[in-house]
Length: 355
Image (cartoon, rainbow, N blue to C red; front, side, top):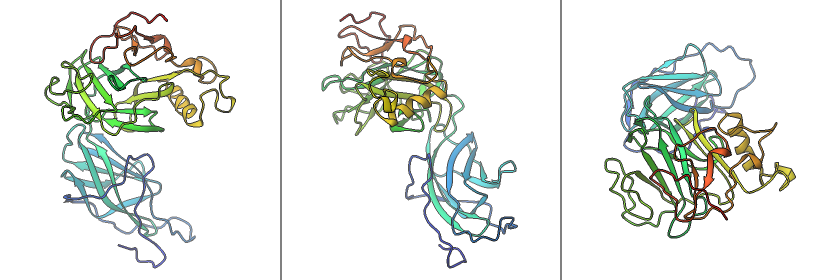
Protein backbone atom coordinates (compact mmCIF):
# COMPACT_ATOMS: atom_id res chain seq x y z
CA UNK A 1 0.00 0.00 0.00
CA UNK A 2 1.26 3.49 -0.87
CA UNK A 3 0.01 7.00 -0.33
CA UNK A 4 -1.33 9.10 -3.18
CA UNK A 5 1.88 11.06 -3.53
CA UNK A 6 4.60 9.37 -5.57
CA UNK A 7 7.23 10.68 -3.19
CA UNK A 8 5.49 9.63 -0.01
CA UNK A 9 6.07 6.15 1.13
CA UNK A 10 4.63 3.36 3.22
CA UNK A 11 7.04 1.43 5.40
CA UNK A 12 7.02 -0.82 8.45
CA UNK A 13 7.59 1.07 11.69
CA UNK A 14 10.03 -0.12 14.32
CA UNK A 15 8.58 1.28 17.51
CA UNK A 16 10.92 2.63 20.18
CA UNK A 17 10.46 0.80 23.45
CA UNK A 18 8.46 -2.09 21.96
CA UNK A 19 9.78 -5.59 22.36
CA UNK A 20 9.30 -6.63 18.75
CA UNK A 21 7.68 -5.88 15.41
CA UNK A 22 6.13 -9.08 14.16
CA UNK A 23 4.29 -10.60 11.22
CA UNK A 24 0.77 -11.74 12.02
CA UNK A 25 -1.08 -14.90 11.06
CA UNK A 26 -4.61 -15.96 11.84
CA UNK A 27 -5.77 -12.50 12.88
CA UNK A 28 -9.27 -11.06 12.59
CA UNK A 29 -10.60 -7.80 11.24
CA UNK A 30 -11.73 -5.24 13.80
CA UNK A 31 -14.06 -2.34 13.09
CA UNK A 32 -12.02 0.86 13.15
CA UNK A 33 -12.69 4.55 12.53
CA UNK A 34 -11.77 5.44 8.96
CA UNK A 35 -9.02 7.81 7.91
CA UNK A 36 -10.92 10.99 7.15
CA UNK A 37 -9.22 14.12 5.76
CA UNK A 38 -7.37 16.36 8.20
CA UNK A 39 -7.31 20.13 8.08
CA UNK A 40 -3.63 20.71 7.38
CA UNK A 41 -2.28 23.18 9.95
CA UNK A 42 1.39 22.44 9.36
CA UNK A 43 3.83 24.38 7.21
CA UNK A 44 4.00 24.02 3.46
CA UNK A 45 7.33 22.21 3.71
CA UNK A 46 7.25 18.82 2.03
CA UNK A 47 6.78 16.05 4.58
CA UNK A 48 8.04 12.69 3.34
CA UNK A 49 8.11 10.85 6.65
CA UNK A 50 5.29 8.58 7.84
CA UNK A 51 4.12 8.64 11.45
CA UNK A 52 6.40 6.70 13.74
CA UNK A 53 4.82 4.40 16.32
CA UNK A 54 6.00 5.09 19.86
CA UNK A 55 3.92 2.76 22.02
CA UNK A 56 0.95 0.42 22.18
CA UNK A 57 -0.21 -0.06 25.76
CA UNK A 58 -3.25 -1.36 27.64
CA UNK A 59 -4.67 1.42 29.80
CA UNK A 60 -7.71 -0.34 31.25
CA UNK A 61 -9.64 -3.60 31.10
CA UNK A 62 -11.13 -2.63 27.71
CA UNK A 63 -8.86 0.21 26.54
CA UNK A 64 -5.61 0.34 24.56
CA UNK A 65 -3.67 3.47 23.63
CA UNK A 66 -1.64 3.80 20.43
CA UNK A 67 0.80 6.71 20.42
CA UNK A 68 2.73 8.21 17.48
CA UNK A 69 5.40 10.89 17.17
CA UNK A 70 2.94 13.22 15.42
CA UNK A 71 -0.80 13.64 14.88
CA UNK A 72 -2.10 10.55 13.14
CA UNK A 73 -5.11 8.31 12.72
CA UNK A 74 -5.62 4.60 12.12
CA UNK A 75 -6.75 3.73 8.62
CA UNK A 76 -8.89 1.02 7.08
CA UNK A 77 -9.03 -2.23 9.02
CA UNK A 78 -6.93 -3.25 11.98
CA UNK A 79 -6.44 -6.74 13.32
CA UNK A 80 -5.78 -8.09 16.79
CA UNK A 81 -4.48 -11.57 17.52
CA UNK A 82 -5.77 -13.43 19.52
CA UNK A 83 -9.16 -12.03 18.45
CA UNK A 84 -10.18 -8.93 20.38
CA UNK A 85 -12.98 -6.61 19.23
CA UNK A 86 -11.86 -2.97 19.51
CA UNK A 87 -12.93 0.27 17.86
CA UNK A 88 -10.71 3.34 17.44
CA UNK A 89 -11.56 6.85 18.62
CA UNK A 90 -9.40 9.97 18.58
CA UNK A 91 -8.01 10.97 21.95
CA UNK A 92 -9.32 14.47 22.82
CA UNK A 93 -6.35 15.17 25.10
CA UNK A 94 -3.51 14.18 22.76
CA UNK A 95 -3.69 14.42 18.96
CA UNK A 96 -0.78 12.00 18.69
CA UNK A 97 -2.71 9.22 20.42
CA UNK A 98 -5.54 6.98 19.31
CA UNK A 99 -7.58 5.08 21.89
CA UNK A 100 -9.05 1.64 21.19
CA UNK A 101 -12.07 0.60 23.22
CA UNK A 102 -14.25 -2.49 23.21
CA UNK A 103 -13.92 -6.05 24.41
CA UNK A 104 -12.31 -6.78 27.79
CA UNK A 105 -8.79 -8.14 27.61
CA UNK A 106 -7.54 -11.28 29.31
CA UNK A 107 -5.14 -10.07 32.06
CA UNK A 108 -1.56 -10.68 31.01
CA UNK A 109 -2.52 -12.15 27.62
CA UNK A 110 -0.08 -11.25 24.84
CA UNK A 111 -1.88 -9.56 21.94
CA UNK A 112 -0.56 -8.27 18.63
CA UNK A 113 -2.12 -5.27 16.90
CA UNK A 114 -1.59 -4.87 13.15
CA UNK A 115 -2.77 -1.63 11.58
CA UNK A 116 -1.97 1.27 9.26
CA UNK A 117 -1.53 4.88 10.34
CA UNK A 118 -1.78 8.12 8.35
CA UNK A 119 -0.47 11.56 9.24
CA UNK A 120 -1.74 15.02 8.25
CA UNK A 121 0.13 14.95 4.93
CA UNK A 122 -1.25 11.56 3.94
CA UNK A 123 1.96 9.64 4.60
CA UNK A 124 1.12 6.12 5.73
CA UNK A 125 2.94 3.39 7.59
CA UNK A 126 1.83 -0.11 8.49
CA UNK A 127 2.93 -1.62 11.79
CA UNK A 128 2.52 -4.64 14.02
CA UNK A 129 3.20 -4.37 17.75
CA UNK A 130 2.48 -6.38 20.86
CA UNK A 131 0.70 -5.37 24.05
CA UNK A 132 -0.45 -7.27 27.10
CA UNK A 133 -3.94 -7.50 28.54
CA UNK A 134 -4.60 -5.04 31.34
CA UNK A 135 -4.27 -6.50 34.81
CA UNK A 136 -5.63 -4.50 37.74
CA UNK A 137 -4.73 -7.23 40.25
CA UNK A 138 -0.94 -7.34 40.07
CA UNK A 139 0.23 -8.25 43.60
CA UNK A 140 3.00 -6.51 45.51
CA UNK A 141 6.13 -8.33 44.42
CA UNK A 142 9.75 -8.45 45.60
CA UNK A 143 12.91 -9.90 44.13
CA UNK A 144 13.71 -12.05 47.15
CA UNK A 145 16.72 -14.23 46.26
CA UNK A 146 19.15 -14.46 43.35
CA UNK A 147 21.92 -16.84 42.36
CA UNK A 148 24.19 -14.89 39.99
CA UNK A 149 27.04 -17.40 40.22
CA UNK A 150 25.25 -20.65 39.48
CA UNK A 151 26.77 -23.94 38.35
CA UNK A 152 25.83 -26.83 36.08
CA UNK A 153 24.12 -28.59 38.99
CA UNK A 154 22.54 -25.40 40.41
CA UNK A 155 21.99 -22.94 37.54
CA UNK A 156 21.21 -19.25 38.06
CA UNK A 157 17.78 -18.50 39.53
CA UNK A 158 15.70 -15.49 40.50
CA UNK A 159 13.11 -15.90 43.25
CA UNK A 160 10.11 -13.56 43.37
CA UNK A 161 7.97 -13.30 46.50
CA UNK A 162 4.32 -12.20 46.43
CA UNK A 163 3.60 -9.99 49.44
CA UNK A 164 -0.10 -9.91 48.58
CA UNK A 165 -2.40 -12.14 46.57
CA UNK A 166 -3.26 -11.38 42.96
CA UNK A 167 -2.55 -12.27 39.36
CA UNK A 168 0.96 -12.06 37.85
CA UNK A 169 -0.29 -11.64 34.29
CA UNK A 170 1.60 -8.91 32.44
CA UNK A 171 4.07 -8.10 35.22
CA UNK A 172 7.58 -8.08 33.81
CA UNK A 173 11.05 -8.97 35.07
CA UNK A 174 13.83 -7.06 33.29
CA UNK A 175 17.36 -8.43 33.23
CA UNK A 176 18.74 -4.94 33.57
CA UNK A 177 16.55 -1.85 33.81
CA UNK A 178 13.23 -1.17 32.05
CA UNK A 179 14.90 0.98 29.39
CA UNK A 180 18.12 -1.03 29.08
CA UNK A 181 18.05 -4.80 29.48
CA UNK A 182 19.49 -7.96 27.97
CA UNK A 183 16.23 -9.90 28.24
CA UNK A 184 12.84 -9.72 29.90
CA UNK A 185 10.18 -12.12 31.13
CA UNK A 186 6.54 -11.05 30.91
CA UNK A 187 4.71 -13.23 33.40
CA UNK A 188 1.75 -15.28 32.20
CA UNK A 189 -1.65 -15.07 33.92
CA UNK A 190 -0.98 -16.85 37.19
CA UNK A 191 -2.90 -16.60 40.45
CA UNK A 192 -0.64 -16.30 43.49
CA UNK A 193 -1.32 -16.10 47.21
CA UNK A 194 0.29 -13.78 49.75
CA UNK A 195 3.62 -15.28 50.81
CA UNK A 196 3.88 -17.43 47.69
CA UNK A 197 7.05 -17.77 45.59
CA UNK A 198 7.83 -17.77 41.88
CA UNK A 199 11.18 -19.22 40.81
CA UNK A 200 12.57 -18.12 37.45
CA UNK A 201 15.12 -20.68 36.23
CA UNK A 202 17.86 -19.45 33.92
CA UNK A 203 20.06 -21.58 31.65
CA UNK A 204 17.70 -24.61 31.70
CA UNK A 205 19.09 -27.96 30.52
CA UNK A 206 16.31 -28.69 28.04
CA UNK A 207 14.88 -31.47 30.19
CA UNK A 208 11.25 -32.19 29.10
CA UNK A 209 10.34 -31.96 32.79
CA UNK A 210 11.21 -28.25 32.78
CA UNK A 211 7.69 -26.97 32.20
CA UNK A 212 6.18 -23.61 33.08
CA UNK A 213 3.62 -24.16 35.81
CA UNK A 214 0.18 -22.58 35.60
CA UNK A 215 -2.16 -24.76 37.69
CA UNK A 216 0.02 -27.13 39.72
CA UNK A 217 3.19 -25.90 41.49
CA UNK A 218 4.47 -29.48 41.65
CA UNK A 219 4.13 -30.13 37.90
CA UNK A 220 7.67 -29.20 36.91
CA UNK A 221 10.86 -31.16 37.31
CA UNK A 222 14.42 -30.17 36.50
CA UNK A 223 17.28 -28.81 38.57
CA UNK A 224 16.19 -26.88 41.66
CA UNK A 225 12.50 -27.12 40.73
CA UNK A 226 10.25 -26.48 43.71
CA UNK A 227 7.21 -28.58 44.57
CA UNK A 228 5.54 -25.65 46.33
CA UNK A 229 6.59 -22.56 44.33
CA UNK A 230 5.62 -21.65 40.76
CA UNK A 231 8.50 -22.63 38.42
CA UNK A 232 9.10 -20.76 35.16
CA UNK A 233 11.93 -21.56 32.74
CA UNK A 234 13.70 -19.04 30.50
CA UNK A 235 14.84 -20.99 27.49
CA UNK A 236 17.98 -19.73 25.69
CA UNK A 237 18.85 -17.56 28.69
CA UNK A 238 22.47 -16.56 29.21
CA UNK A 239 22.03 -16.36 32.97
CA UNK A 240 22.87 -13.51 35.32
CA UNK A 241 26.11 -11.49 35.34
CA UNK A 242 28.25 -12.92 38.12
CA UNK A 243 29.88 -9.72 39.30
CA UNK A 244 28.10 -6.66 37.94
CA UNK A 245 24.39 -6.69 37.18
CA UNK A 246 20.86 -5.47 37.81
CA UNK A 247 17.31 -6.78 37.89
CA UNK A 248 14.09 -4.79 37.92
CA UNK A 249 10.46 -5.80 38.31
CA UNK A 250 7.54 -3.75 36.94
CA UNK A 251 3.79 -4.11 37.15
CA UNK A 252 3.59 -4.10 33.34
CA UNK A 253 5.61 -3.17 30.29
CA UNK A 254 6.01 0.60 30.52
CA UNK A 255 4.52 0.61 34.01
CA UNK A 256 5.68 1.32 37.55
CA UNK A 257 8.81 -0.27 38.96
CA UNK A 258 7.87 -2.54 41.86
CA UNK A 259 11.35 -3.60 42.93
CA UNK A 260 14.98 -3.81 41.84
CA UNK A 261 18.35 -5.10 42.94
CA UNK A 262 21.81 -3.92 41.93
CA UNK A 263 24.96 -5.96 42.56
CA UNK A 264 28.60 -5.23 41.85
CA UNK A 265 32.05 -6.16 43.14
CA UNK A 266 33.54 -2.99 41.68
CA UNK A 267 34.36 0.37 43.27
CA UNK A 268 34.22 3.99 42.20
CA UNK A 269 37.92 3.74 41.39
CA UNK A 270 37.58 0.64 39.22
CA UNK A 271 36.97 2.67 36.06
CA UNK A 272 36.84 6.46 36.12
CA UNK A 273 35.21 6.61 32.68
CA UNK A 274 32.07 4.84 33.88
CA UNK A 275 31.90 5.81 37.53
CA UNK A 276 33.46 2.47 38.43
CA UNK A 277 30.67 0.39 36.84
CA UNK A 278 32.86 -0.93 34.04
CA UNK A 279 30.64 0.09 31.11
CA UNK A 280 28.39 2.93 30.07
CA UNK A 281 25.53 0.44 29.80
CA UNK A 282 25.84 -0.73 33.39
CA UNK A 283 26.14 2.81 34.71
CA UNK A 284 23.06 3.86 32.71
CA UNK A 285 21.07 0.99 34.20
CA UNK A 286 22.14 1.87 37.72
CA UNK A 287 21.29 5.53 37.19
CA UNK A 288 17.88 4.68 35.74
CA UNK A 289 17.02 2.61 38.81
CA UNK A 290 18.31 5.35 41.11
CA UNK A 291 16.25 8.03 39.37
CA UNK A 292 13.15 5.83 39.60
CA UNK A 293 13.68 5.48 43.36
CA UNK A 294 14.02 1.73 43.01
CA UNK A 295 17.67 1.77 44.19
CA UNK A 296 18.57 5.25 45.46
CA UNK A 297 22.11 6.57 45.55
CA UNK A 298 23.62 7.30 48.95
CA UNK A 299 25.66 10.16 47.49
CA UNK A 300 25.10 12.67 44.73
CA UNK A 301 25.35 9.95 42.10
CA UNK A 302 24.86 6.16 42.16
CA UNK A 303 28.11 4.24 42.61
CA UNK A 304 29.17 0.57 42.77
CA UNK A 305 29.49 0.93 46.54
CA UNK A 306 25.69 1.36 46.68
CA UNK A 307 25.22 -2.11 45.21
CA UNK A 308 25.15 -5.52 46.91
CA UNK A 309 28.66 -7.05 46.80
CA UNK A 310 28.37 -10.61 45.37
CA UNK A 311 31.88 -11.66 46.43
CA UNK A 312 31.66 -14.92 48.37
CA UNK A 313 28.42 -16.04 46.72
CA UNK A 314 28.32 -19.37 44.87
CA UNK A 315 25.74 -21.70 43.37
CA UNK A 316 24.63 -22.71 46.89
CA UNK A 317 25.47 -19.41 48.65
CA UNK A 318 22.85 -17.14 47.14
CA UNK A 319 22.15 -13.44 47.67
CA UNK A 320 19.06 -13.23 49.89
CA UNK A 321 16.82 -10.80 51.64
CA UNK A 322 16.05 -11.53 55.28
CA UNK A 323 13.45 -14.14 56.20
CA UNK A 324 11.04 -11.23 56.73
CA UNK A 325 11.89 -9.88 53.24
CA UNK A 326 13.03 -6.47 54.50
CA UNK A 327 12.78 -3.87 51.75
CA UNK A 328 14.55 -0.52 52.03
CA UNK A 329 15.75 -0.55 48.39
CA UNK A 330 19.37 -0.69 49.55
CA UNK A 331 22.18 -3.19 49.92
CA UNK A 332 21.36 -3.41 53.64
CA UNK A 333 18.42 -5.68 52.74
CA UNK A 334 20.71 -8.36 51.32
CA UNK A 335 23.20 -10.92 52.63
CA UNK A 336 25.04 -14.02 51.39
CA UNK A 337 23.80 -17.21 53.02
CA UNK A 338 26.15 -20.05 54.13
CA UNK A 339 27.03 -22.95 51.85
CA UNK A 340 24.04 -25.11 50.85
CA UNK A 341 21.61 -22.60 52.36
CA UNK A 342 20.30 -21.25 49.06
CA UNK A 343 16.53 -21.79 49.12
CA UNK A 344 14.79 -20.94 45.84
CA UNK A 345 11.07 -21.38 46.37
CA UNK A 346 11.17 -21.34 50.18
CA UNK A 347 11.72 -18.89 53.04
CA UNK A 348 15.22 -17.43 53.29
CA UNK A 349 17.53 -18.05 56.18
CA UNK A 350 18.94 -15.17 58.19
CA UNK A 351 22.27 -16.96 58.59
CA UNK A 352 25.15 -15.08 57.01
CA UNK A 353 28.12 -16.58 55.20
CA UNK A 354 31.37 -16.07 57.11
CA UNK A 355 34.51 -16.54 54.94
